Length: 511
Image (cartoon, rainbow, N blue to C red; front, side, top):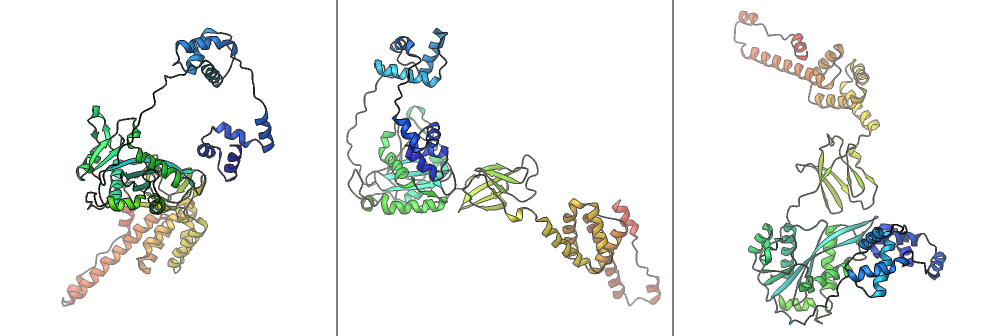
């Protein structure tokens, strides 16, 4: 075990990951990592016959266990403290070890031994008669640090032992379990006459003393397909041992040791594994090849004519941080500036095809990031933050190019920068947006007016621009009217006076 711990540590796994991989206590991992090989060999060769601090209480504990063999070590510890005020200050683990020693030496098991369950060999089911279903999960290795938890659905045809597996990143719901059934029926090219299940919450909402109540979604699914549903009793997984073995087989013969890349690739590869190995090798019990037996069995399956339709997944909601990032799996993903408005700012997250997609609550795409399996990183898109030194200069040059024929342009822009240094870039962008569709004459009038009246705000500049554009449009209309009425006498023309607008009208609006 010491060598295994050292080997995993050299591969980059941390203490928690080594604990999960080997199934040992984290303290043991820490102790082994702190030892050199020489220290370890010296440690295991040292006899550890340590004196038991609780030996003088041996008879007391023995009598307690004889009267109540069901008592736990914690209860024994409390009784010792109750009866002995001078009890040594020892840890609960020490008390537990001492109680176990007494139990072993006095042959006092904690629970009455159960008689082993008796089994008999059942005859094989007929072709097409039965399938079994179960779920599993496994923490796969990832290309970064840490592990990725995978959830999978399995179905096995009881006669041929032909297997199907469907993997996903989130726990199964009734909708996704129904979809996995459809995929299995498509894979098997038919539907068995009955399917055996655990009483899983995905399928069952109440046992009801044997009259099992199905979830609404699963009831609709079973009503739409011609198979009988059979549920095992609670805590009796052995009733569907065939699929239980498949779950172990998938974990230890396929997922174990593989490195997770993305879920679509994993699903594609698991089907290739089934075709290559899972359904292609001789089965240990039947001594036949499942794929060859399935060729016979599929002739007896009920017809499946549907088409699997992947359900819409309710995407998980994540809060937006003040710095316009989202914390997900120990990494920080950037969002466009302004996404965070207040404490109630949230986004939706979807993970697929080695990417992560962030959406607004109304499903508008906000950002896309490449999948990162590392931890503690800041994953940032360049367009989510302004490169102020470059973009500001570029915007200024665009605006000045449009205004360069106006002598006061440079002084006007400089005045805005001095008055609103933090919002200078925003003002430039508003000016640029509004002057793109205006004539040079109107731009000149608006800028001169704003410069002379010290209107140092781009939104108000836009209003002035709009005012002069309307004035120009009105003049054009009156000019066209005069041309069309040219048959009027000169006196009439002489008497016609075009309406004039006073700039004071605009000033009154601005005030």
